[in-house]
Amino acid sequence: MTTTLSPLDRAKLAVAERASTLIASGMKVGLGTGSTATFLVRRLGERVRSEGLDIVCVPTSSATAALAREEGIRLASLDEAGWLDLTVDGADEFDPDFTLIKGAGGALLQEKIVATASNRMVVIVDVSKQVKALGAFPLPVEVLGFGMEATRALLEKVLETQDVDGRRIEPRRRDGKLFTTDEGNHILDLHLKRIGNALDLAQALNQIPGIVENGLFIGMCDTIILGNVDGTVETIMSSKDQTETGSSNRASSFRMAGAE
Ligand code: 5RP
Image (cartoon, rainbow, N blue to C red):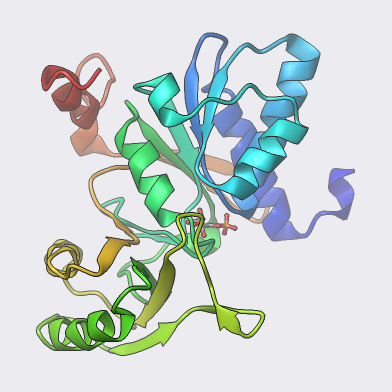
């Protein structure tokens, strides 16, 4: 069956299989959205059926929820599940600092909430997502429908202050209509070409009231599972996130803050 896959899909399957080995019975797992996450959901479904893998999963979109249900995976809302052991998700770009652009599938808001409520975020990507500098991929920004033109005008002004190489803003459309997220919001795709300072940009975007969330994931991912088109897989850990016990500083600091 895998012989009919394209080289990129083979890479996606390989990273999904590697990520699946991090998941064991008893775990609470966040399930990402997108084509790479789809391979993981299918693999977990196989394991539920063949090994009786006993996990509770929180999906990050209605699409992932539907697929996971079809696969017979037990689902819970994030509020029912509470703190998660692990979230596995795809990405549109990642840079050497493990900063991500996410949201091509329009699920960035739930993805960010779920990843933030997890001890670890593991990202599964094919090699096409690896970049030296973020920004060639348009940055998705989720905005309220209310006052969207005012939000867009403010966004244009904010982008003038940012270290980027492009400033085109494009409302995302599907089937001739504005794309609507699972939360009933819309997406503006920012064609920035190069993002000089992701943290500055994310903070500036967060100051605009009509912006619900942006697709920059900063300091959230501790492990990248990278698939090459020859089928080989590399697991890259963020060295700055490692403690002696191997758990991430982000998780530890959340735990210390009583979030678990
Ligand atoms: C959806 C996402 C996806 O994780 C991202 O777009 C990667 O998708 P794919 O695995 O299909 O390339 O952020 O909102």
